[in-house]
Amino acid sequence: QVQLQESGPGLVKPSETLSLNCTVSGYSISSGYYWGWLRQTPEMGLEWIGSFHHSGRMYYHPSLKSRVTMAFDTSKNQFSLILTSVSAADTAVYYCAGGDYVGPFDQWGQGTRVTVSS
Amino acid sequence: EIVMTQSPGPLSVSPGERVTLSCKASQSVSGNLAWYQQKPGQAPRLLIYGASIRATGIPTRFSGSGSGTEFALTISSLQSEDFAIYYCQQYNKWPPVTFGGGTKVEIK
Image (cartoon, rainbow over the protein chains, first blue to last red):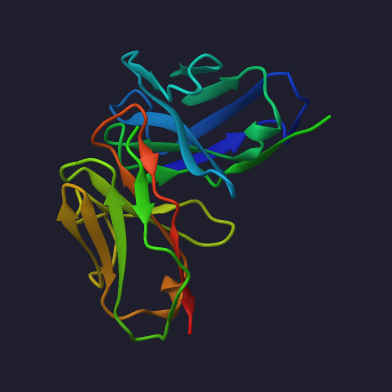
């Protein structure tokens, strides 16, 4: 059974950098799935942030591309999200997820709430 | 960016009733459309992909239809555990993948 678990600080100060990790168990991230990050707010709903394949293909939301970096560590079966220069608009529940392609996500973490506030 | 528009909610439905939710795309997404169910405090769960293919473990009372710009999710006989918010998502033209705003199905 595939399980995803997000981890990271729940509070980030404005203008600073948000860093989240996703630990995957039950499936190797180098086995062919696409992995990614999404976020959800009451105002914006569900928003895709980006996805990647272990081969190195990376895809980012155009509106976030300048501030987002994804990375992965196959030895730890983890991947990460880095979002720079955060503002209150980045306050959201962040999910890591996986799927056959950059499309339907059939595996989700439980989500982690991140608040941007001083 | 493709905009996904879902039927406004909430929809008030009695258990056992049939309900159909709609989703429209601002341009054709072919059959690259997914539906998710989300309950409070939980992550979304994939119900349907490819517009009409049930994901693993999804009950047969859930069915999806449509292509191009108009899609529907039908729950044939609403069960108590089906009261939730439902989202559609297109993955035909990306980046970005985009979601609809969701339709809440509540108990009448």
